[in-house]
Length: 625
Image (cartoon, rainbow, N blue to C red; front, side, top):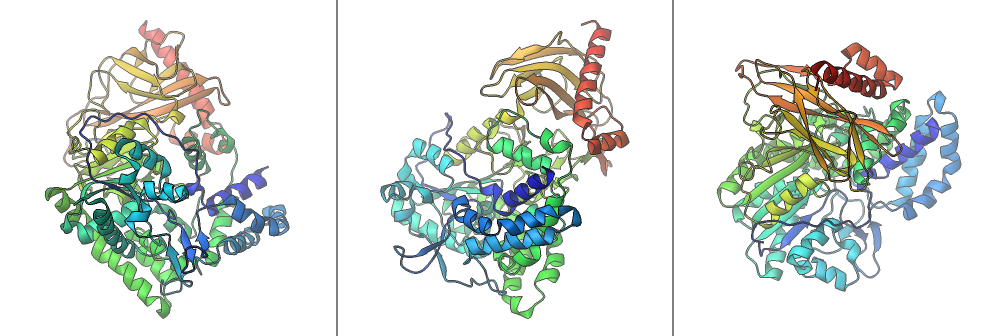
């Protein structure tokens, strides 16, 4: 079973699990501001545009149409005996055998995607169209080309608000570098303005599209062609997954992947237990073994190199691009890393000062799925998406860290260094590209894109800079009553069931850093969407600003009947100006050494949950409430 899971999960990652398509889901959305009459240009995530081989659109082969199981499966089946043979000898470290077969299956399925060492395409590929007249949603539907509408669920919601004729899908060869794509975006916006008759456009950009759009604004922002711009989970400064793969140091975080899949499929059940008790590290070996073969094709994509974070760029360039034939590719990526990227914050702020409204909305609080130990949305390091300074994953800044104005309640993110400090929102717990899929950020991003109501993080107290995800997969969300968002205090905690279908029973509340006693009784059952205010007694920590971690334990009638969620809350105190460094975060009732041992044994969470509920009960009985 372990071998089978290893092979299957390796294939999921190798063949683009991040690009999985789900059924069309739309949500009822009401925004308060007056709707803009500017058209919206959708700049999609990575590998979003189709690529064609041939000049005649009627006869051209589709070199890339997205991850398609029907295309891939025959080539995998062709080598199934070879792959199975590798799986059979997994204990003898034959990851290279499987990796070789997987890479050949990839090449057989998508043979035209390779680039030359100088970054140019081996084959003459082109996109569907760069003409606004045929790439707005209305035209694509009329032509029977609905499959070419980018970010289809988001586009459908936007079309319902401003009309499908006002939504435009930008196409580009995503293998090329950010500057190439930004130049094409500038030309496309000219086409949209001419077709729509409007003097400006609004832009929604996702992931890689965020990097492309930020580059466009750095190069062309002074033209004033855009009004509202929302960069969702933007890969402005790179993607951790790209570095982990090229460095061949993948240490796959299967638990993060399972959680990402739960969020992506809107499941209200928790499957993380499937991987907590076993080690699927053989996936790492397969992926790392694939890199050498794949480097001869996708290793020369300019976009891959613009994804490498600046602190690792020279290391990777020396490893892979020392051949003189790669000089043009090196020059292109050098320009992005050393000329364009360092100016992006300055250029974005200048755009806003000159009348644009550029916003960044991103997820945080997760480890990179391939192992990079940084705060991220599972794919993009939070620092790369926003320019913020972040503590290493699993750590926070020391008590009393300043500045407090832009400091997250969990003391893990310092947003004062952001590209746009007053126009950047973080959602703790949100995974990559899930701005639209989570209630706390969905209305925010639509309001930012389609109205002029919210100008910065100070405009609407319902949308503070640091949010926490209330996605259905988390089952519960909670906050202290009577104090600002993200703060600990008051005399009660409100717990809400975030599920759409499941009933949740609250069975215990545990605070790591303070002996708080909660009046919970025998537990509280919450129907979907229902909330309850739970009073508590006890004293909060005193001294310099610190963090209180609160855990809510709950039961559900599903595959994992017991579970818990932990959130960090700021405890106000006197800020120590000389506070520096970071400290480890351990919100569970175990010493660090015991915590690590129980994690290796696969019983950490179960024992923690039982112990936290016991401590919660004892504290309540002692307090007599």
